[in-house]
View 1 (tube, helix red, strand yellow):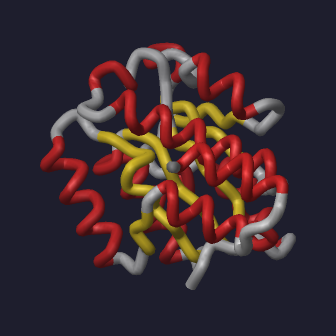
View 2 (spheres, rainbow, N blue to C red):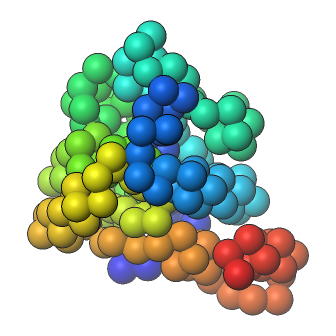
Amino acid sequence: MLVDAKKTTLLLVDMQERLLPAMTGGGEAEARCAILLKAAKALEVPVTVSEQYPKGLGHTVPMLKEETGNAPVFEKLAFSCWRDKALKDHMIAHHEAGRPLVILAGIEAHVCVMQTAADLCAAGFGVFAVADAMASRAPASHAMALDRMRDNGVAVVNTEMVVFELLGKAGTAEFKALSALVR
């Protein structure tokens, strides 16, 4: 299974102002999420953003908020995005519109991202968890999340894999612009 730009959406999970600074590797995850957002914009891949209890954790960090453009933002209390009715309905609409694949990035890897990945997989989505575009407070938690996602049928990938799979070929203006971001 490869990421296909015409069949995929990007779900950015809880990359929020008060949460991100507590993450080990949060800066790298933020930079990788920015690359994913640029690729999604260039290749017309729909983006969805979740925010866990923004009243307490703040909103999406400014750098990523700028990159999301007019992407829908869903406030949630459930850890899994799938367990929030509005977000679930939104993802189902994407699936029914021919986009059954989800690129998943964000924080915390072992809580909201992992639970969302497992639920999406169980619901019939093809899920690509972008390991270097997610973080947890403790590195061991991040590693366990990746193992658990693999055990649930999630494809664990990195940002460069996603970008080149979305592109599909070299020799385009998009290739020139996006390949420079991951090298």
